[in-house]
Figure 1: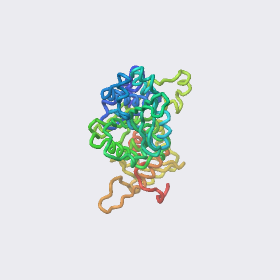
Figure 2 (figure 1 turned 90 degrees about the horizontal axis):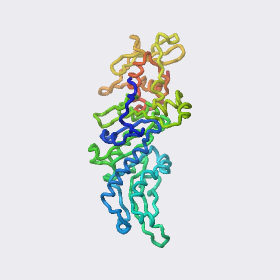
Figure 3 (figure 1 turned 90 degrees about the vertical axis):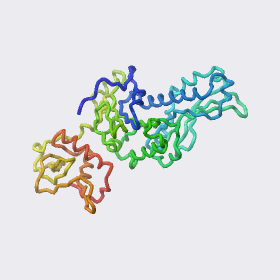
Length: 398
């Protein structure tokens, strides 16, 4: 596995995320993992609203107070975002701090002074918190009277992946970017069932025939939480330190981005070398090297081969050591049955029990490997069983 490239074209001279370059490279799905402080959420929200306000300036006249008051009561950007979190509760919490004034103050300040003297401006969310909500920039006449003039501009929407069934209709042509924030869950069991497929469902519900044309794109944002997550499994991603990895013929692009960590030197010194420092400063996946390498010949005796499995095209032995560790080795035992990982033929029953048990140990980082190379090959293959398997309630344990 190669080291992270030191020259990072996806970072601006100021050290922020280069959203313009990323936008040009991403065809449909872009998965962006970056250290804290690189400006993932801020960068994409700012990018979307900059483009959005450019579209509305081309459509309407904001030059004078007189022209402003002739504008429709409700307008909309022709480049809008759709911001997603995993659950409704997370989306509701995120809404409180999502719309920073930074994102719209340049547009506000570009308006005629007479407009700003007469109108207040603020952000407003409409719709139930249990479903998708629209986000408006509202201008409302300051003067207290029975019916004050009000102008609103639709900026985008906010919802949750869990609301996929509520995100339906003929599509929304103004939505150009879907932002999935914090796509990595803190705990492995917090993901939704079939979550990547749910996201693809939302993408097509919003994009319809625009999907795959470059007119609508999805960016997934997160820190380097864990290599064991359903998105990496779904797209078969395992180049965890590569700056850029292309999957599915370019339909999905993965980025692992370092940055000039924007911390005080005292803060850096506190975190440097710690588990949290590797996560927040160095953008390392904590579990990328947490799978134990243990040579079979060095394991505590007695060593017993339980059975053989085929991982990829390589037969391997599953061993139990004298201190109850489970270890994978290239050494096999001809007297033991061999389990082959493949689809059943006709009415044949395929016993995948060993793979599911091994996957459980991968998920809990209690599986041992006879070599680093074997760990990489095995972990990649077994990872899919963490998210795609039948109930293990009736399977026997080691």
